[in-house]
Length: 177
Image (tube, rainbow, N blue to C red; front, side, top):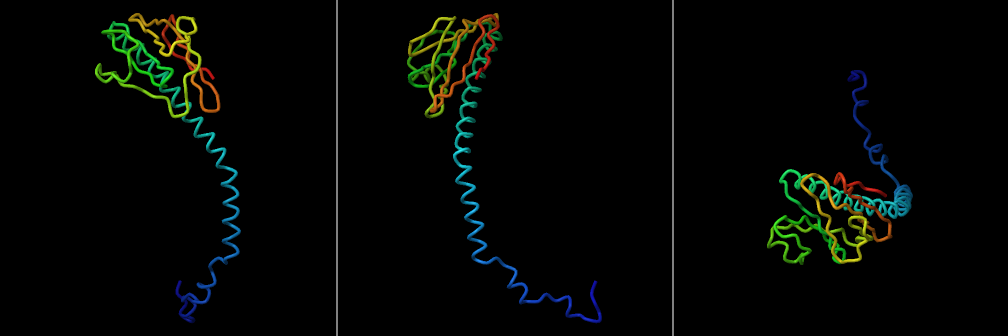
């Protein structure tokens, strides 16, 4: 409320407004603390981002396996997912001509290439329980929902690995760490 006896009591003192700031020493101390905290946190943040990228890449491939199985059942034709281990790319192959073809010409058949993030690579691979040493690997999905089955490893730059297992009886893809 306004004080009628002392109207000046409501007017702020201009000197107190000037003195309410921070000193240079206080600002330097705060900035030093923030700098030290960020120096400790940044390496941890970098590992977290790499882990998120790894999980995203694994989820994307597992989702493509699930999508391929569903398309095979829905359209009643076999489909396959092909992985080019040397280039770190993979794609869903159309049923007209199953071939482990050159991915550079995939656009001619309407095939969309997916790529692993930079620094990530495919590791060990097995199809139908048989380890594959080939550059290209294909996992086939059939109209009844089953598949040839397979296991694919994805490795990050620090050699941490995830494994995706496609069950031959159900065609379901599961991620293992």
